[in-house]
Image (tube, helix red, strand yellow):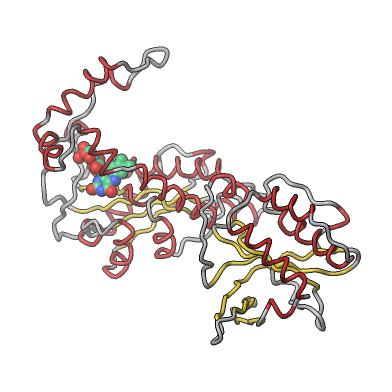
Length: 413
Ligand SMILES: Cc1cc2nc3c(=O)[nH]c(=O)nc-3n(C[C@H](O)[C@H](O)[C@H](O)COP(=O)(O)O)c2cc1C
């Protein structure tokens, strides 16, 4: 297919794609340019009907996913390069946003080169941008490890349709000589007028009860609401795959208030030292931010003792028959066995527990963390123990403030 007449193909014949042909195309496409010649991408080939069915919901059940003989998921991949570095006494630093952008660029260039080659041989291809919409579902379905992130999906098959060519904006609308020329009402009319006059587009506007074609995009196809919600889950997925730090995430995601405590919260276990005593804080997290905090002495008899390796777990709320509540801490050991420490509230000094409830209430309504820490510091408390508690809470919360430093005498243990 020549580039002048190329079109997206969404319907395919039953004719299979020989493995040899697919591999030839996948190999040839790797001649595309790539950062540092590192080839920061991986391709997952899906042929199996069950595997396609698992991917389909992540693509809003677009029929091509289950109907095409082959589905390719192209991933930004710094895993392989990182593993190579680790195996060669080199210290990789690719768990950050820049590395994701670089790997995504590589992956998309590879994707486009593959499309060109596939279309040249007569295959039909559809690019699915939905790949980045519910990326976590795809990550789970394809078992993608850290530093691997899906950025493009192609459905590939022999064409069973020949849809009309789509329109394009004129050259002058997107090429700027020497510097960027701002658009004017007049130039927008000139560039977009022909598109708006197309009978299909006018029909589309009419049946959707809209005034303009642009409203089809803003109000129906790509809305602010969807874009913002998807951006949030995209950030979460980038964090989960190791391309964003917790600090990046905290800065990037606006906080939501959740008044009813979820039954289960992820939890960080923070150990610290106060005046030679060993303390522990359980910080319940919602959207990776502190939502509640329980602190106390780390001690077999009076408090809680945990294996040193435990740094994460879950805090589970139980409502007893009499309506009273209990909070348990659950962690998994390296072999995956779960241990539950029941009744965090009873394990700790009841006085701390009261203050913990107060601070958790403040966290729940998302008071900025530096204000919470100031509030805790300003509490006038008279016993030494409770003053230890104060610095313990501050110590545990400070780690969630980007760039904050911790006093040396309160070092983590
Ligand atoms: C980033 C991106 C996302 C896309 N997502 C989808 C999609 O989810 N479903 C689909 O049917 N086509 C999708 N397409 C294909 C476009 O709809 C198509 O390229 C466009 O309408 C122009 O049509 P043509 O390719 O036939 O010229 C996507 C294309 C791109 C580049």
